[in-house]
Length: 461
Ligand code: ADP
Ligand code: MG
Image (cartoon, rainbow, N blue to C red; front, side, top):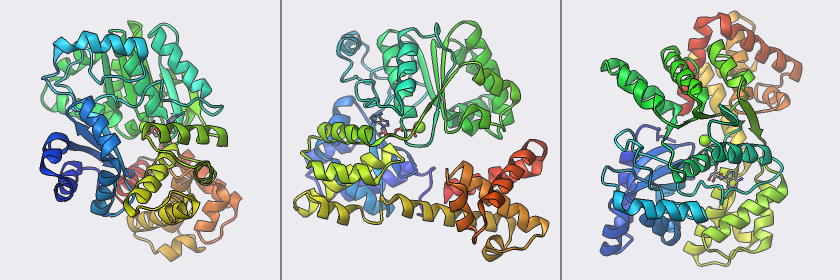
């Protein structure tokens, strides 16, 4: 894929250009014109809509068309998500009513934030769909769900920080936003930031000599939601900023919620003092969902998009996609769109055609191995074949171990699978290679820089 995370705006404009030719002008003007591309990463395209109503309409009436158009433009599978843009013109007069509604029903959040939230601070905000009401609880996530509920009912009192960790696509961000919606409904001030946003703001504040302002803003919030803390790794300066923000909030009993794609004990590249602060909170994990939960999620999703999907189709998808809920949802969207556009009956045969080669988790994995091998080899300037071979000079050996480490840590691959991807190494060799990198990282600055560089290249790949 040639697209990268830093061009969502232009990409979305290309999608709009295409859409313009397929919808009537009034429709385009009313629903699509004022949308903007906010982020595009991991096949997820976040698009901002001016208000919750437009977001809802786009989601319910035009989803298939939008999603297929986006896939055509980016040349790959895409999950489009609509978020409400936060503008300075948020109509304060409408607000108390909406907030009340939300408190009572909580099923359909408004996306309107409490006035104390500083709208200038950030463009994106909570996803209107990520509520407790829409979160399907199963064995794999019941603990995390319960902790999130507890925290949002008694913020700052029970567990702070709350750290949610789990592999990608298992609902960490969803739960975090749910806490946010609840906090907003209860009149609390809130800052939600991805760790990337936090980092960018902090660096910018330093550059402009406005760190005081930065501090004040973060320190005055009731609830701080910081998503994907693993991105603090390697950013020493920002870690400093985070540490002080954290302490200030902690001392005044504010609620901090953090998500991470790995357990706190594996965040070895964060400063010890941060790691131990996180470990001092409540740390709960989310596991991959079992089959019942997967089915329940698919059923709920089919309902929200108003689709009657045969049980056999749901079974088929639930059986086939088990590690990532985003992919699970994406596959359903895809087959529904496919049936829509081709005017065919939605059955298992059609599903096989629609998702073949796209949502197959094994295929996904093959691509990942390949990308890791390629990226690592390029970074170290060694041959891919050497990486898969037996050469033992220092550079090749380190590159090989680095590839093992990345497949394990970032790709969640098993030792045997990694061995296979690297030309048939046995699992003890792989385990040793991963350990070797793990133990070297804290003491080898060059290795840390290498890891960072490679991760950046992987993110762009
Ligand atoms: P993560 O942050 O862990 O990568 P997300 O929170 O972004 O994952 O979840 C990925 C997608 O899966 C989102 O669309 C989210 O709404 C959905 N999802 C995850 N867990 C659940 C759940 N238990 N019930 C319903 N939807 C879920
Ligand atoms: Mg997330």
